[in-house]
Amino acid sequence: MADGGRWAGYRVGMTSRVRVVWTPELLDYDFGPGHPMSPLRLDLTVRLARSLGLLDLPGVEVVGADPATDLQIETVHEAGYVAAVRRASDGGAGDPARGIGTEDDPVFPHMHEAAARIVAGSRESALAVWEGRAEHAVNLTGGMHHAMPGAASGFCVYNDAAVAIRALLAAGAERVAYVDIDAHHGDGVQRAFWDDPRVLTVSVHESGATLFPGTGFPDETGGEAAPGSAVNLALPSHTRDAAWLRAIDAVVPPVLRAFAPQVLVTQHGCDAHVEDPIANLDVSVDAERLASAWLHDLAHEVAAGRWVALGGGGYAVVDVVPRAWTHLLAIAAHRPVDPATRMPDDWRAQVVELYGREGPRSMSDGADLAWRPWSDGFDPADDVDRAIRATRAAAFPHLGLDPLHD
Image 1 (cartoon, rainbow, N blue to C red):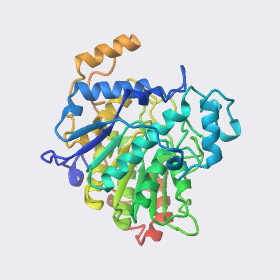
Image 2: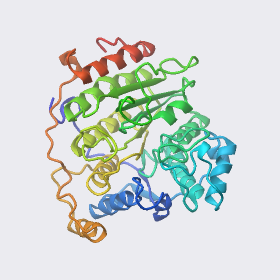
Image 3: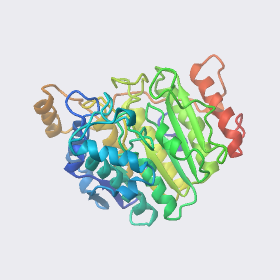
Image 4: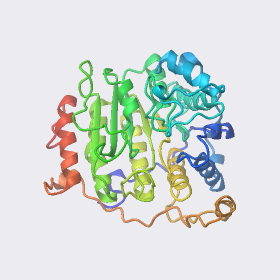
């Protein structure tokens, strides 16, 4: 199926209120020189979005965020862990047993405040969407999906996605769905809601057999109190566009339609890209753009348009992250950017100034996005098809779905 088909259409003619979280203070979440999660990826993304005029569109509201309170963070995290982050942040020693001061999560000045600001951005966005103050909300600094209740993990200090979902539940939401298309399994969010039938977590990622955090296998389907609340699609290394899109289409829409969430929270780590230096998937920015559009349309279909989109991983700082996340912002604003659009001259000049090299020339990788829907039939010789089938067999019956036909 070509780029479009039954998923075509971004509702370009609609005017929507879109809440975009941004303030330069969010760049303070900085593990230091040489760390893969460089804040420059966010700076370049916002510069690109501004150059393309996306942040000045009617209905787009750009808002800052003050740090979340300890009580808000402790809806997900242990009080002792928050206290340990504060101590390290204020010049104290790290706590490697809690993941603080490790190679992945080194201590940096004002770490607590920086991480708490990200939490507030996602939490307040979720509540704005739930309360009808915004139709969509985007926090590109969010998506810190690896943080655990009592430990930092995988570049993530506090789990803003989980705190945002907890806030939605406290505000009265009865069903919240979380979909994660980062190359890494969304383990921290799954952990937070493992036994909560009100939350469906769906993660499409590279298999834990080959990539951190080593979890996210099909048989992880939720705890005893919430069977079917977790859906995991573990893909083989070097999965390419057509198979990645086929996998998402074969699993995500059916489970969302069956669960019927009132709010959709999505994580858009773009480290599935072929140029990402950490993961091993071979996806294009064009496929990532299309997946974002699918999730946007699903939010309108199943959740009355209530959509909270978060960032996440992505370590090709110049060539991938700014384009992938600018496409996400444009889709949320209902003003998608044509993939053939040339990169603005002022943005390319900034890249040369900052990095001493040329950046990408267009918003596209020039990928052919033809793909086959699952209804075309299962190929037992195909590694990705086997992964899809394993996920459907494990998760679909819990949701009242037929793994062979739905």
